[in-house]
Image: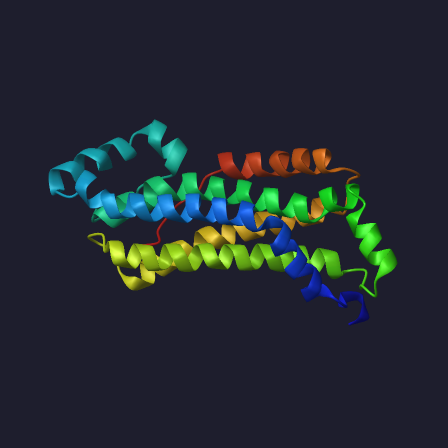
Length: 215
């Protein structure tokens, strides 16, 4: 356990450094997500609107972008999940990449990690662990805000299980890619190359087949 000494002290320092970034990203990501959910019934609230957008989403171009719409019964919540999952997953990945790179390789390049490790009784794995915990907490906050917001939005066809599954799934996607970024940060020499590795890894996953079925 000595290798993790002062992990929580470093986590506190990370939050003190990143609080503006975290606040802005979470307000934008979670706030817009909830706002769109609240307005979605007005966009696709009746059966004619649902049938029209469902027909569009089943076209080859939309299947390539959003994946197949396989549900037999279409509701506002199904359309919301189908359209929003891809876009918000991308935003969550970008958010986590930014946090991961800033909390690992960029911090090492600035000399802060070496200064902390050299001048204080800090475990060798503490900086990396603090960065991973920061990602986990940030994504957890996003999941809580969006889960509560979608519950209050009460879209037709949604339920509590689906709302929270969707919120946690998006947070899990972001956290997973953030953790992969932390792995890359240990393999390459600078933050610029970490970012290149991140998005080279992300691109095949973005363009691959997917299917959303949260609701």
